[in-house]
Image (tube, rainbow over all chains, first blue to last red; front, side, top):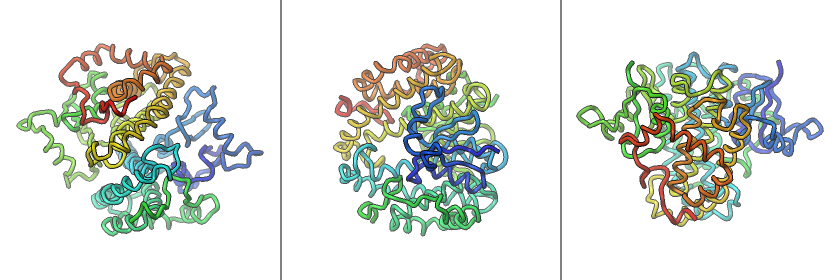
Length: 243
Length: 243
């Protein structure tokens, strides 16, 4: 089987991490192209060239994008929509696949908001130049948005007729993996606020731990393939934004 | 055929408008539930009750959500993913449907950013209380983000092997309808900045006009079913944010 090609920034988890987790949890063969040496066709400049390829009739707006033979698909949630049934990570049937996607889109909304706590004015400007607005936005995110998002996922788990171990029926989906990543990121960026919110969302906290404990995920998290959280990614640990 | 039930805020276009446009353009029967009189089961309080329904095992995070018989689906882009093939608005085959969705997700990203120009700090706070940050964010949106988004859609149109009239192959998809709505909203909120960006994206401007001219869309836009843009929606005309 030809490995999937994931194209994403080589030094951050970022949005690409949601795709990496799905591929890893399924044990799917893939190449994280931009992390390969330049001599092997990798590197960030290759990523930028591919993104700007004028011959691609269906270009992506931004990384990540996935190549699978003739298929090129961008947008994290669309990539997962494509991979879901192929990797057995979107439940069974159309209703489960749609619900999985709806959950993913809500994780994606939370991810945008997490990013905007440190960049509320402009992605292209330094954090230091928008720190005052960031302090205000982060306060609202901590006090209102983190509890709202995690509270909603808690309700989803509690109402799952198949039990509160998974978001969709009784098996692992990419929504579980993405919620794991959201919780991990929030804990890194907002340890105090996230601990408070998780105290009221025990099933979400358990889901995070259960996902981390799965053999393939565990092995991935221990490997060099897992890039550590850092101050260039979506989730950034600025202590002044927690509280 | 039982009409689709769209559940959304009754006084704004908002995110619900992307769903309304798909239903209208396809001539599909639907009820805009919260806009019905309270005596007929409509109204905003009904919307809030449905959203908070503790018996729904798959609750939506926020409006809009769509009910089609046993199916309840939330998240604008997931609703369109569901409706696309049913309304003949996602091209033909899996590749077109995926590309349509990828385009939709990029429109959705632009919509979040448009919203955040007037609410960069907190959705629940008044615009007036975050106006200073809004001025800064809007400047970046005008100068960098509007041109980037519309420039990307222009490239997509120009590279479409079937011609620059539609985003996906040669027929109308929900991505075309959503791009129409994005352009209409940007023109309302940022008339000067959008005119400048559209001067460099002529195929996007033509697509907007072509969509508006389609018989069903035209009839809809002239009808009372189309809520006018207003200062409660996602796109708001604050002259100080344009320039």
